[in-house]
Each structure stands twice: as C-alpha cells, then as structure tokens.
Image (cartoon, rainbow, N blue to C red; front, side, top):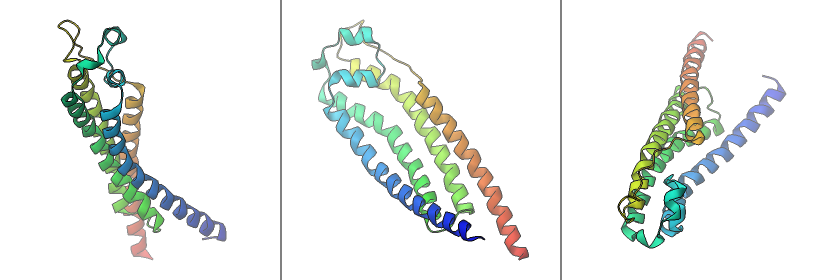
Length: 187
C-alpha cells in the first residue's frame, strides 16, 4: 500500500463518516417533514401530491378536506417513508462501517443489498399510495367529481433502477468479501 493509497483510504473514511451522519439526519427529518407538510400544506397541494388531474383541482373546494382526511393521508404517505427510512438505515450502516475502515465485508454487502430491497419496496408503496390518496382527498367532492388517480413518474422509475443497482452491487460485494476472506486464509 503506497502513501497515496493510505491518504485515499483516510479520505474515504472521513467522507463515509459525513455520509453516515447525513443519512441519519435524513432518517429523522424525512418522516417529520411528511407529517408537518401533510398537516399544514394547503389542500390544493395535497391534491397535486395525489396526482389528481387539474380539471378536478379547478372545481375543488379546499373546505371539503376534513382533518381526518389529512391525518389518514399522512398515515398513507408515511408507509412509503417508513420503508425508505429502513432502507436508509441499511445505507447508514454501510457508511458507518466504511468510516471504521471496514469496506469489503459480508455485512456491508448484506446491508447494501437490503438498502436496494427496501428502496424498491418504498417505490412500490408510493405507487400504491397515489390512488389511495386521490380517493381520500376527493371524498368530500360532489358525486361525479371524485377522482381515482394512478401515476408512475420518472422519479419512481429512477428509484427502482437505483434499488436494483444497489441490490446487484451488494451481491457483487458479497462475492468480493468471500474472495477476500478466502485469500486471507492463504496469507
């Protein structure tokens, strides 16, 4: 190992420690932001999140959204957020291990694969949440104006690709960790 390799490894450990802290902060702040936004945002914004078509939004009366609908909407939205937070917990564990100098281990491989799996689950939950939220927030509208919206956007598709990539990279890391353990036995 050269001096430059050591400097690079120390830099990687520092950056990993920063990313571990940032990941932890997102894990705490994201659910709080969802709750606050769901409870305090204008009713029109809730319809936008639920992907309700603009034609329906134009005739929408914000007074038709009752407090129980906001609370239920927050609960529905929190399902995908909680799944995301579990995924971020696994990513946090990877960063924390990297910060301690533990890079190519089976534990990191397992956490990174689980990160991908939980992110995929969060995307599926957000896809299911869209029609539930659209119905929930338009329940107070007159008959014929209630909406059932179904939507898949590019952010969800990209998140699924990232999740699949993390799952594959985790499997590759597991193979690398196995090979490193095997090589260590020969030394």
